[in-house]
Image 1 (cartoon, rainbow, N blue to C red):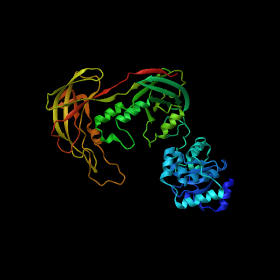
Image 2 (image 1 turned 180 degrees about the vertical axis):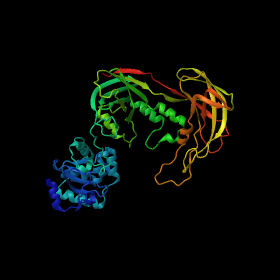
Image 3 (image 1 turned 30 degrees about the vertical axis):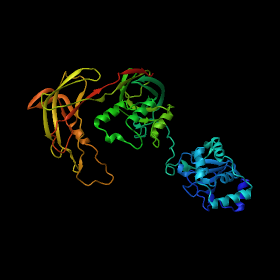
Image 4 (image 1 turned 90 degrees about the horizontal axis):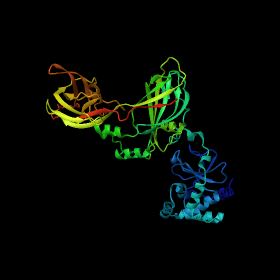
Length: 509
């Protein structure tokens, strides 16, 4: 036992006025280190002071409100120095908080909170009984001690690592296993984990760097992890432009066109369709999943643990953004083949790109526009405009009342496009109205999603009946749905389905 502390116990001085109160019950907190001997309490937020077995007479402050981040800090090399710090500062509060302050803030705290008369009396007793003088430059003393101390040497009890006791602690990563029927969050079925096949492949495609660390051979097929690297500066610019931060979720306030544009600009989004050539036979992905690691998440938010675990497992540089896509390729044969050659082909899946707007007043109106990639000029000719009302009960819900008024437009495109081109209403549909009592905790309707699923945005090219006569190569578009008949002319938007990047193949084995 520290000699000064042993002498302190015999002298009977009460340190409660200076923020170190004794208790009969020294029940530890989840973050109280293993082997801790508690000798005082601050009286707020569970803060307590202790020695820790294995660290001699060093005095520590334990701050449970810090959670799993910095809950324990050394304050003094021994109890005598701890008393000298109290003489210099007048209260333990400044000592406990010194770890997060610079010297100016520390001095300001002491200046704004001078010792009370009661505290001065206790401090006088300490100085007289122990023949101690106030610590010179207390902030510098504490900072020097803390900067030279390795907090990793502190051992904690099981409670510290228990998410129920300490929600702030990061869970321990599970054993890394990859299944044909699983994903990053677990798996179902009775299949066994796949056998890892190290690949260590790297290539550039679609303006990004890609890493394929490994594939996993399972009884039913091959599982491959595709890791797409993204420059952090691209992520920051995107987040700043769309004002993405903890207090702001702009998605609900955006129009469909703005959401399309946001998706196009998102550097962490790229929809692709990989295919493999294994020993000359084509394997196509049937399902998959993905996780995203963003090094630029706003303060107070964290990445999903599965993403961080994947980045750590593969040794990826966590200063970059990463999208890790897991794709599953069933075998082309009934048995797992021997891998002699393996070639990957990357193909981008089409993305929707918003185009120019136009307003159709009557049949016969025409509108000219160009394709954003090929440059081909198209002429859209309106063939028919008709205000329509969907039959009541079209949506099969007794709880919600849905809008039913729409405008149907048929049109032709010249020349007939080889690429997918569609037309959609620029306006949003009216929100459904609740007509039946809502059950507790049930979801709230935010948009006419069911409407879009029924009437779609366009159909065609197909055969559409106009004025009773079937016509080939006509396209049809329906406006958004509204509760009142649509009186004004609809503003339409052309939408293109394009590929921004060409296919590319890479030899893996």
